[in-house]
Length: 180
Image (tube, rainbow, N blue to C red; front, side):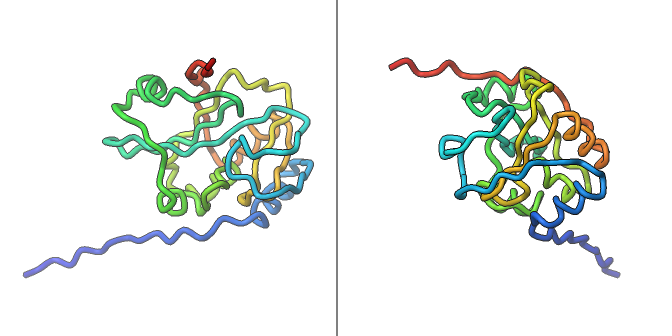
Protein backbone atom coordinates (compact mmCIF):
# COMPACT_ATOMS: atom_id res chain seq x y z
CA UNK A 1 0.00 0.00 0.00
CA UNK A 2 1.53 3.32 -1.06
CA UNK A 3 1.86 6.07 1.48
CA UNK A 4 0.92 9.53 0.43
CA UNK A 5 3.54 12.08 1.28
CA UNK A 6 2.33 15.55 1.93
CA UNK A 7 4.63 18.32 0.93
CA UNK A 8 4.28 21.51 2.85
CA UNK A 9 4.64 24.46 0.58
CA UNK A 10 5.15 27.89 2.01
CA UNK A 11 4.15 30.70 -0.28
CA UNK A 12 6.14 33.83 0.36
CA UNK A 13 4.31 37.04 -0.41
CA UNK A 14 6.14 39.96 -1.96
CA UNK A 15 7.51 42.16 0.80
CA UNK A 16 6.00 45.66 0.75
CA UNK A 17 6.89 49.01 2.23
CA UNK A 18 3.38 49.21 3.74
CA UNK A 19 4.08 46.28 6.05
CA UNK A 20 7.32 47.91 7.26
CA UNK A 21 5.48 51.15 8.07
CA UNK A 22 2.79 49.14 9.89
CA UNK A 23 5.38 47.36 12.05
CA UNK A 24 7.23 50.59 12.83
CA UNK A 25 3.95 52.20 13.86
CA UNK A 26 2.87 49.19 15.91
CA UNK A 27 6.19 49.12 17.76
CA UNK A 28 6.35 52.93 18.01
CA UNK A 29 9.67 53.19 16.21
CA UNK A 30 10.26 56.68 14.79
CA UNK A 31 12.01 57.07 11.44
CA UNK A 32 13.09 59.62 8.88
CA UNK A 33 12.12 58.85 5.30
CA UNK A 34 14.40 59.68 2.35
CA UNK A 35 12.96 59.25 -1.17
CA UNK A 36 15.50 58.75 -3.98
CA UNK A 37 16.19 57.16 -7.35
CA UNK A 38 16.23 53.35 -7.40
CA UNK A 39 19.49 52.12 -5.87
CA UNK A 40 20.80 48.63 -6.59
CA UNK A 41 24.32 48.98 -5.13
CA UNK A 42 26.04 51.23 -2.62
CA UNK A 43 28.05 52.72 -5.50
CA UNK A 44 24.82 54.14 -6.97
CA UNK A 45 23.88 56.13 -3.88
CA UNK A 46 23.72 59.83 -4.77
CA UNK A 47 22.34 61.11 -1.48
CA UNK A 48 23.51 61.11 2.12
CA UNK A 49 21.83 60.20 5.36
CA UNK A 50 22.57 61.26 8.88
CA UNK A 51 24.17 58.10 10.20
CA UNK A 52 25.99 54.94 9.17
CA UNK A 53 25.82 53.99 5.52
CA UNK A 54 25.57 50.22 5.26
CA UNK A 55 25.08 47.51 2.70
CA UNK A 56 22.98 44.41 3.18
CA UNK A 57 23.91 41.14 1.51
CA UNK A 58 22.08 37.82 1.48
CA UNK A 59 24.61 34.99 1.34
CA UNK A 60 24.26 31.25 1.56
CA UNK A 61 26.50 28.35 2.45
CA UNK A 62 27.10 26.11 -0.55
CA UNK A 63 26.87 22.79 1.28
CA UNK A 64 25.07 23.77 4.48
CA UNK A 65 22.34 25.76 2.69
CA UNK A 66 22.46 28.20 5.64
CA UNK A 67 21.45 31.75 4.81
CA UNK A 68 23.16 34.85 6.21
CA UNK A 69 21.92 38.41 5.98
CA UNK A 70 25.11 40.41 6.43
CA UNK A 71 25.04 44.09 7.35
CA UNK A 72 28.37 45.86 6.97
CA UNK A 73 29.75 49.30 6.31
CA UNK A 74 28.86 50.61 2.87
CA UNK A 75 32.48 51.18 1.92
CA UNK A 76 33.74 47.77 3.07
CA UNK A 77 34.95 45.35 0.39
CA UNK A 78 33.73 42.10 1.89
CA UNK A 79 36.25 39.26 1.96
CA UNK A 80 33.71 36.50 1.36
CA UNK A 81 36.28 33.67 1.75
CA UNK A 82 37.42 34.95 5.14
CA UNK A 83 33.80 35.41 6.24
CA UNK A 84 33.00 31.83 5.20
CA UNK A 85 35.85 30.63 7.39
CA UNK A 86 34.59 32.71 10.35
CA UNK A 87 31.12 31.18 9.94
CA UNK A 88 32.54 27.63 9.62
CA UNK A 89 31.26 27.44 6.05
CA UNK A 90 33.28 25.81 3.31
CA UNK A 91 32.04 28.30 0.71
CA UNK A 92 29.66 31.27 0.68
CA UNK A 93 27.94 32.73 -2.34
CA UNK A 94 25.35 35.38 -2.99
CA UNK A 95 21.79 34.10 -2.85
CA UNK A 96 20.08 34.02 -6.23
CA UNK A 97 17.18 36.32 -7.08
CA UNK A 98 14.82 33.36 -6.66
CA UNK A 99 16.26 32.53 -3.22
CA UNK A 100 16.02 36.19 -2.21
CA UNK A 101 12.35 36.25 -3.13
CA UNK A 102 11.59 32.81 -1.67
CA UNK A 103 13.22 33.65 1.67
CA UNK A 104 12.32 37.33 2.18
CA UNK A 105 9.85 38.29 -0.54
CA UNK A 106 12.38 40.77 -1.93
CA UNK A 107 13.63 41.67 -5.37
CA UNK A 108 17.23 42.37 -6.37
CA UNK A 109 18.51 45.68 -5.01
CA UNK A 110 16.09 45.73 -2.07
CA UNK A 111 17.90 43.52 0.47
CA UNK A 112 17.02 44.78 3.93
CA UNK A 113 16.74 43.41 7.45
CA UNK A 114 13.34 45.14 7.60
CA UNK A 115 12.03 42.18 5.54
CA UNK A 116 13.01 39.62 8.17
CA UNK A 117 9.36 39.42 9.24
CA UNK A 118 9.00 37.21 6.13
CA UNK A 119 11.52 34.73 7.53
CA UNK A 120 8.86 33.06 9.68
CA UNK A 121 10.90 29.85 10.01
CA UNK A 122 13.96 31.83 11.21
CA UNK A 123 16.19 30.29 8.56
CA UNK A 124 18.29 33.42 8.04
CA UNK A 125 21.17 34.20 10.36
CA UNK A 126 21.61 37.93 10.86
CA UNK A 127 25.26 39.00 10.97
CA UNK A 128 26.04 42.62 11.87
CA UNK A 129 29.50 44.09 11.50
CA UNK A 130 30.54 45.14 14.98
CA UNK A 131 32.55 48.01 13.50
CA UNK A 132 29.27 49.82 12.71
CA UNK A 133 28.88 52.68 15.16
CA UNK A 134 25.83 51.81 17.24
CA UNK A 135 25.54 55.38 18.52
CA UNK A 136 24.80 56.56 14.97
CA UNK A 137 21.53 56.25 13.12
CA UNK A 138 21.33 53.63 10.39
CA UNK A 139 19.41 53.51 7.10
CA UNK A 140 17.59 50.62 5.43
CA UNK A 141 15.25 50.21 2.48
CA UNK A 142 11.64 49.52 3.53
CA UNK A 143 11.47 46.54 1.11
CA UNK A 144 11.76 48.84 -1.92
CA UNK A 145 14.91 50.49 -3.23
CA UNK A 146 13.49 53.97 -3.90
CA UNK A 147 13.24 54.91 -0.22
CA UNK A 148 15.57 54.71 2.77
CA UNK A 149 14.33 54.81 6.34
CA UNK A 150 16.73 56.19 8.92
CA UNK A 151 16.33 54.98 12.51
CA UNK A 152 18.46 54.88 15.63
CA UNK A 153 20.51 51.74 16.06
CA UNK A 154 18.79 51.07 19.39
CA UNK A 155 15.40 51.21 17.63
CA UNK A 156 16.74 48.81 14.99
CA UNK A 157 17.70 46.41 17.79
CA UNK A 158 14.19 46.81 19.21
CA UNK A 159 12.74 46.01 15.76
CA UNK A 160 14.78 42.79 15.70
CA UNK A 161 13.79 41.89 19.27
CA UNK A 162 10.12 42.23 18.33
CA UNK A 163 10.76 39.63 15.63
CA UNK A 164 12.66 37.40 18.12
CA UNK A 165 15.85 37.81 16.09
CA UNK A 166 19.16 37.62 17.90
CA UNK A 167 21.87 39.02 15.61
CA UNK A 168 25.44 37.83 15.72
CA UNK A 169 28.02 40.62 15.89
CA UNK A 170 31.31 39.93 14.09
CA UNK A 171 34.11 42.01 12.69
CA UNK A 172 33.32 41.42 9.04
CA UNK A 173 36.58 40.79 7.16
CA UNK A 174 37.40 43.10 4.29
CA UNK A 175 39.70 42.97 1.31
CA UNK A 176 42.25 45.74 1.01
CA UNK A 177 41.24 48.54 -1.37
CA UNK A 178 42.91 48.35 -4.76
CA UNK A 179 45.64 50.95 -4.96
CA UNK A 180 46.24 50.85 -8.70
